[in-house]
Amino acid sequence: MVDHGKAVKPRFKTFRDKNKAETYARRKAIEKINHGIAALVIPHEVSLEAARCLEQLNPYGATLSAATEYYIKHCLAFRNAPVIREICNSLLDELRLVDRRDRTIATVWPASDAEHWRQHATRSEPYKGKLSSG
Image 1: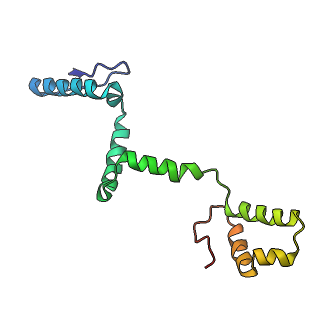
Image 2 (image 1 turned 90 degrees about the vertical axis):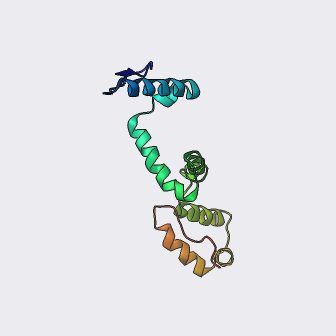
Image 3 (image 1 turned 45 degrees about the vertical axis):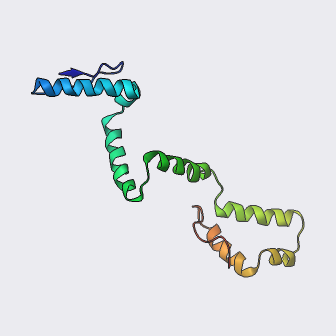
């Protein structure tokens, strides 16, 4: 039996062969020195999830770090962004607030575009289509 020597709830691994146990203990001791205790306290479920994610990323040559950075930059940064309905309503409110005539609003917001946005304004999720009408 090998004790990982962590300051958290101990996990033990048993071996039938003493040589394998000693080799495993030396490898874990080296890992602890090289990566610190944080590498040893990763729950098994997290390790399995990381392995599954790496399998999906391997064909693209991406790493977990790169995927995490991309997710934070491109997804989490916009999680509080307004949905299209709110943007459309806000724009119309601003145009009306400054007493723009319907004709002026129509030049800024042509009827074809207005209908397009009205369709999307009824959705509660963010718009995922093209933002330009051309």
